[in-house]
Length: 313
Image (tube, rainbow, N blue to C red; front, side):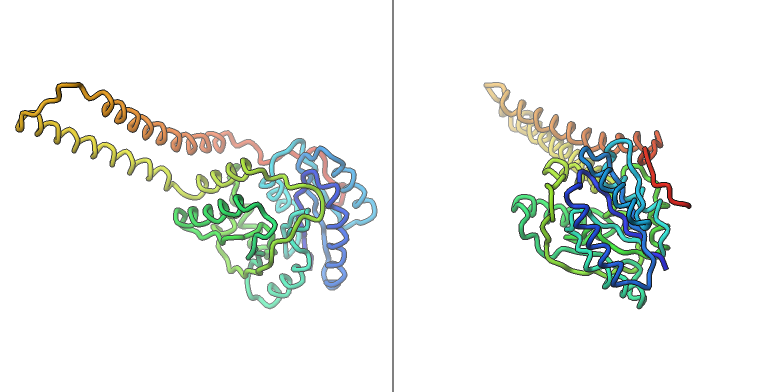
């Protein structure tokens, strides 16, 4: 049987030698299996390409795809899944925050037919900035309330999957991908392996707070229309409140004969700003969905490969 290990890489020249050594140790432990190490270079600006080519020269199990530019981790994972031929396929980060030492345990679980997917889940966020941890937890609570599928808090992209699962994920052909949601949406039996947070072995994180925020918005917009419903409810509530306010002043002026000597400019201004804010919010939410529809309709490729290894197909 063949095991494919997919490693998306972006500026990981320092970490790759450590990861490769760890993967070789895993290959020795699972010597009854054949392996392929698939490195996806996502438009790196350092010497990542040279490091990968060097690994290929000394190891025929190494395969690679180099993107023409930076398309993002989601595209890199999709490219790896398309290229992988294994009966079991794993996705893992290059920075060693996804412990390769878990792979033998994952393989054993699939061998025993305990699950179709064995996925890693962090139970602690030690070493991570507190504000990032706070917003991450809130994101998982929010998206799980909105979505029909459940995304586990602390879930990593690191997982080992059977071939049937990989084929199902590839069949989800959307361009704007949110893999954590796709993994949950396709279903199948999942076993979680919990582990503590692991620091990067080398280099610096590529995920800024702003990038994580945009990723969170992508996840919410990709898997729920709840924000559209929220905008509808807010508009209905605002209109209803305006109607009640109108009745109140009608009764006050026509029936009770109470008039304001001074025109109510402050209250009028507050209501205009309030209603205007609701309208802009609704338009912004609607724009997110229209924008994603626009991108999907154009059907541009998820990635463009500038170079691939010359291994025989």
